[in-house]
Image (tube, rainbow, N blue to C red; front, top):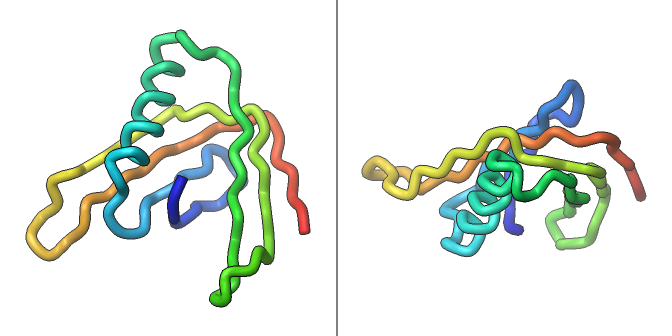
Amino acid sequence: MGFYNVGALAPQPVTLTSLGAPTAAQAAFWSDWYKATLYGTQTQGRDVAIIARAADGHEVQRWTLQGARPIKFGYSPLAQPGTAPTLTVSLIYTNVVNSL
């Protein structure tokens, strides 16, 4: 769901921070998932792929966070003058698979 800076994968949690302004759909996706986890309406984790791409767009590395669940969500749609809105989500997971 977009482009993010990725914090370290270990120790947990991994934190994703949007690069540039997130779309309304991106904010809604992460917010809805976080709320479903927080309120217990979604108890199973999801697999989340983090893909590193070279400047020409080809995939150079992939990590799959298995059983991921958001534990923290932040969205600031009203940025200060000269700054872009940001979205941040922290995920915990049961396993990470490194491929490529």
